[in-house]
Length: 53
Image (cartoon, rainbow, N blue to C red; front, side):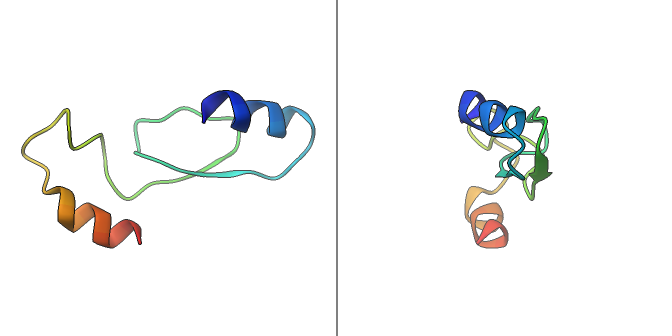
């Protein structure tokens, strides 16, 4: 998604990326989960999935 997001931003399109808080983007970032739950087993995936929805 990063390449698509960056190209759209370069073309002047307003982009909001829904991703983890550790993501990098030139667009707006909307994050609920601090980092991928696959990488941090202390995070409860169902909780963050629900919050993201």
